[in-house]
Amino acid sequence: MLNTLSGRFLILTTVFVMLAEVLIFVPSIARFREDYLSDRLQRAQIASLALLADDMLETELEAELLENAGVYNVVLRRDEIRQLMLASPIPKEITGTYDLRMAGAMTLIMDAMNRLLRPENEIIRVIGAPVRDAGLLIEVTMETAPLRAAMVDYGVRILILSAVISVFTALLLFVAVRIVLVKPIKGVIGYMQRYAAAPEDGRGIINPSSGVVELREAEEALMQLQTELTHALKQRERLAQLGGAVAKVSHDLRNILTSAQLFTDRIEMSEDPLVRRLAPKLVNSITRAVSLCEGTLAFGRAEEPAPAFAHVALGELAADIAESETLAAGEAGVEIASEVPPGLMLRADPEQLFRIIMNLVRNARQAIAATGKQGRVSISAREEDEAWLVTVADTGPGLPKKAQDNLFTPFQGGARKGGTGLGLAIAGELARGHGGSVMLKETGPEGTVFEICLPKGDGAL
Image (cartoon, rainbow, N blue to C red):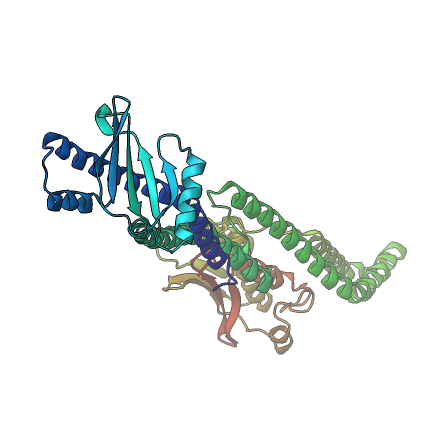
């Protein structure tokens, strides 16, 4: 607690508010002392006015007036005449005189602090100006013990009130800091931790939303850093995969081109009718070489951006894919069908989702076409509480064991002869960018089923 930002802010706020209250307390206690002494002067003036109204007051009544005023004697100066109005025995000598008429702020503060620090009871003389111009001055003699007791009581109440205000203010600021600063900072930390755990997950890239200028600048800088790092990591991964496959690709490509060169030489040197049988093989060899080269180069150059999430009508997208692949199938006898429920919406990058499903459908179509038999490829989907599930199923021959073992490995996961295995690798990478996955659910002589899982939410849950 004390090592957290909000905990330290709570402690500092309490300390600073208490310091502010101390600065307020000193002049406040001085003001209280001045008011206390002024009150005693007013009471003494009232008692003296009662005496002026009746010169024949009894001794008991004079003592009662002095006790009520809280003083030992009262001196009133009127018309330049200094007159002892009320008097009683003083228990000990006077130790100090305080003139409230000429005292400045610093003098009052120093006198108040001295009185608080001196607990002994003393007799002091206090001089002030009578109220309503009822004379030139009024002077009283009084004890300091009641004054100090009242000052201590007032000071304790002020300190308690200050402590309550300090704690209440600190709690309010604590809650405010938690909401305005700590919570957004924890949100940024959460994005950083999620991104560190799965850099390929596009949901881990922060979306700047803070209303505080400094925090928003930090979020924008983090977003730029994450985006650039994601691209760099993807490019590095591709280059590593490409480097590992170069030797194999070079060997296969050399063999294919050598065969093509032999066929070409034979064609150029002979008019033999055998040419009609060799020509298709030459064309197929060259086609496979070109396809392998193009796929390799395309994968090495690719720089997949982070997904731009939007709401996608999956039915329309699946229908476009089915129509496109149906045209590509031609006379092969492969049916492509979309069975996505109408109105199903999901959150994804439209272009990348199109490529994911297209790669799966195209692989299935080509696998069925390679058998020379009729078949069917279907696209379906369903929505669950935490994810959208898109299924691509076919009635093809199933995946061979080698293809299953290297399903998403570039240049190794191809299920048909002459394939590069890049389609599934690209689909898997794009799905991971959405925080999801592409999974092989089942495969066999009855067909193959792939399932695309796209989780809901933005990765902050």
